[in-house]
Image (tube, rainbow, N blue to C red; front, side):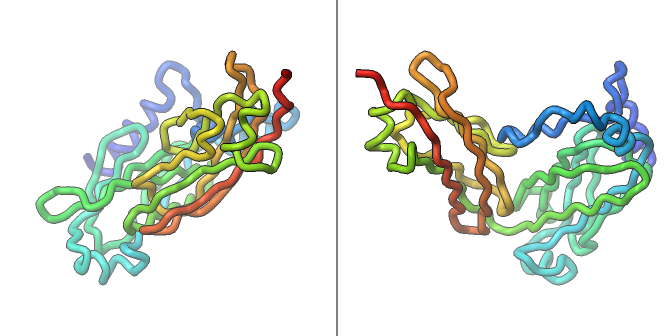
Length: 240
């Protein structure tokens, strides 16, 4: 599909059924909140009319012009949230699209070999604003792991949870499924995570599923290594 037809399909899909031209950024980690109704006019203006998208990529942290060949990469397949797919020579290192309807997008970026098999499949979350050029980027480097750990009232979860009303913990991380474990587990680990900056939202809850406390944290996942985010929940003591 050529770029003009892709934009037409994109616009039609976004506005189909009166869906509007903006969307809430649901990152899956609880860091998206309700719009500020007291400033609705300025918020709405961000999403009126089209903007431009400029996507760039590196391979193993190096310029695509030279690093693609070393990695055996031939093309980058780009998948927009609504619309078709396109392939761009990996060595080009960039892709531009004008006239993109303003809004929030998850862009699939697949690094492909010459035979079409994937080396990496990564997602770029970005926002296109009206009348502006959005600069998005992705580094095709080996993934890492993310460990979300927690304490309760400043003490290790393994020894403290049982003395409080905190029975379980649900962890929410952008682009990843929610994970729910017993409070005493003290951690959850996500593997095969695209390197980058992540936010985690944790909810400690009672045995009958009432929320005890919520905490947020941020951290970086390095390529080929493990990033750590630590949350410190507060919870009342369990009644004897």
